[in-house]
Amino acid sequence: MELFTTWHTWPRTEPELRRLLPAATCDAVAKAVEFASRYHGDQRRPTGAPYLEHLFETLEVLVRGAGVTDPDVLCAAVLHDVVEDTPCTVDDVRLAFGDRVA
Image (cartoon, rainbow, N blue to C red; front, side):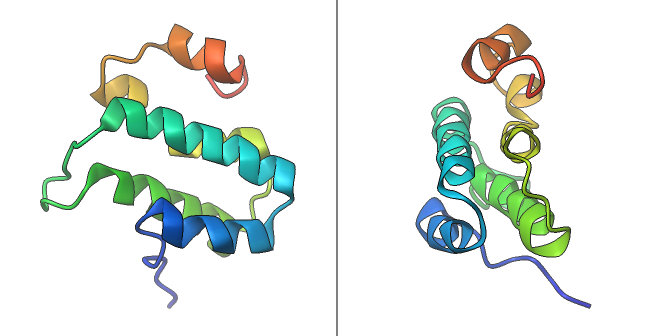
């Protein structure tokens, strides 16, 4: 069984993502990471780990594990908790990323 636990930070994730996906897809995901980082800030998971680690692990499972390349799906994955766990609204996500991601 393969574990997807190596993408814990954007500096660790981005080079691998850029090796695996087209530049435009990586740029879209980078925008989503910046957006999520702004809202999640210093949030922590129940384990005490930075919350953003969860988002990078989700991204790693989709890209490395499932071979997902759709930029909207990957952006939605990065943003999947931003409305639930921060003051961000669905309209904020829609404005920044469009209806499909929202």
